[in-house]
Length: 462
Image 1 (cartoon, helix red, strand yellow):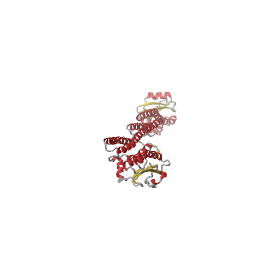
Image 2: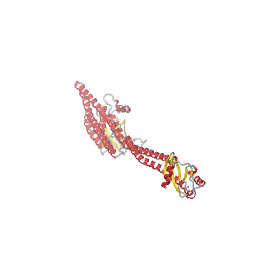
Image 3: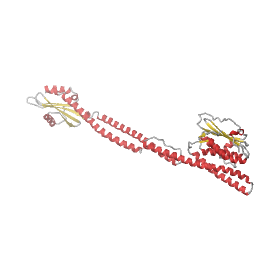
């Protein structure tokens, strides 16, 4: 398309240049010829006064030599003979006598083409009453003087116009083709699975409208895929919670065949669910995040109400703090639910029955910190636990729980830390950033410690 526009512009410009340059070149040639003939007429007119007063050869030769053309030998004078006077011939004429006779009879100047140029014949009345003819030879070099230079200038101007037209056409073609090329490349990229590709909304109005429609379509595709993956992950997490309950209940069935079969079936089901979660999370990590949010306090209250039933069965003391007021966080609700379930599931899995645990929320203008702490044996090697969170979990652990939590925090610019809790066991501290930190800034994880089990107003006991 770009080269087609350039070719059309070159053809049109060339036609315009030819239409104007050819007539202008012919006009310049004609003007040069007229200039040369006019100069010859002035040279012939300079001989007229001498012919009017005398026909003496010496006087006439002196008058001819006084002119530029006469000095160059390009003037010839023919005075016809009359009664009592002899004819006079000065110089070598370039035309035959018949042409001279015809010019004398016509009585007006005329131009005759001759070898090497033109001959201007100028009739002039002399004192004897006859008509003399002055011939001025105009060579071709004089007729075409300046024509070649003028034509060269016209050719250069024409070439410059064509080159300028090509440059303008190429610029316009690029402006039209580039958005279309970007749109095609973006379509190919989206077809290959690159969901982050977008098209700059510039260029002509039609291509700009196409870019806007493409970007809207790509956003819709991303939204649909994100919703699908979130749904798959959410359903998988919802299965993970009752599986934890089933595994704990299966442990109480004893060592009989029925108990072993139940525990084997639950373990196999856990592995299948874990594989589904890993796949959903891997796909979700590759997609563009969707800007959404939820109320962390409401989510924590809802999940604590769910887990409190199992906590009551196991004799665990439960407490919460900081969830009385809404706490908005920039994460998907299903992701926060999955993260809380993963952390609380770890408490039930890795601490003995009867171990107390608590969930505390601290908020500021920069971040929201969620603390999940317990009174269990604690974590002897937090670094190794975080490595397990990246997928190196041992028997009975998928290694996915802390990975879910870490992904949620890092998606906002936050992080996850493990340490000792005020209850004497392990503490998982989740930093959810509410806005980006300044360059070189450091996160402040300091929070006000409370002994939650001694604050009945903020405690819900199971």
